[in-house]
Image 1: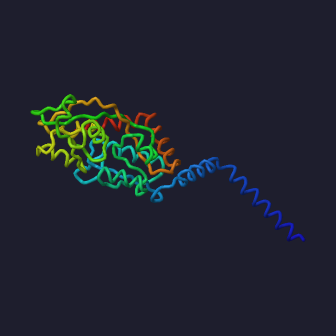
Image 2: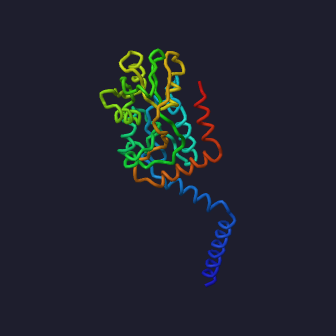
Image 3: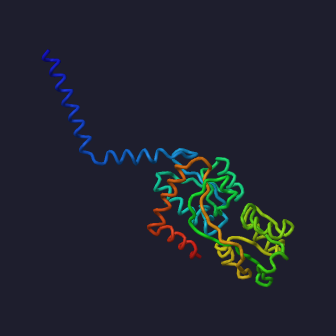
Amino acid sequence: MKKILAMLLAAALCLGLLAACGGNNPNSASSAASGSSAAALTTLNPGKLTISTSPDFPPFEFTDDSGAIIGIEPDIMKLVCDKLGLELQIDAMDFNSALLAAENGKSDAVVSGVTVKEDRKALFDFTDSYTEITQAIVSKEDATVTMDVLGQHQIGVQAGTTGQEFVEEDFGTDHVTAYDTYSLVFQALENGQVDCIVMDDAVAAKYIADKPNLVVNKTTYQPEQYAFGFHKGNPDLVKAVNDALDQLKDDGTLLKIIDKWMSAD
């Protein structure tokens, strides 16, 4: 009997000590909550955020001399992933393929200078917008093309872009030639296969920076909002990314990233 009483007292003492230890660790609850929040995010590859992109779109995404993908959007997504406890994986491809990858669940999101449009909302769950652009016209300096005469010329565009959509709607497909990449579009302009290019203004400025024979003119198309298009049906992941973006906006980091790459040579 004494042995049984002793064992019961020892067990009670151990339980009391365990309860006391738990109560004296103020970080235990918050640490567990933080860990479970990160673990609750479902991605294509566990622990990674996989994005599809077309890295021929400076300053938003392009490759450096070593082949690494750099620019505004990679910088943003790296910081977002740091906040979410995820590793960033970037899959490079042409723009149309990048859109399809996210739509079909081959990537978590398309991050490639994507304009938010009503028809795309049916295909993707978009984050909040992070910047605004407008369409511009690139042409040779000795054959300047403006909006007033745009429809009289052969227009080069990147396939799948809003630029292609706008000019085909306004001037017809006979006046428009689409290419998979902007490198091919600019090559076509230099070779005289097209008379001009319609593309996003910030990207146009980067492409002609070292091409003194080319000029940029404005269009009258409405400004467009850039955001990240996630594979549909993952609201928790989109919310987590939006929360991270809000933090980057609030502390000024987002604007610093954009300014850094917009002003870079």
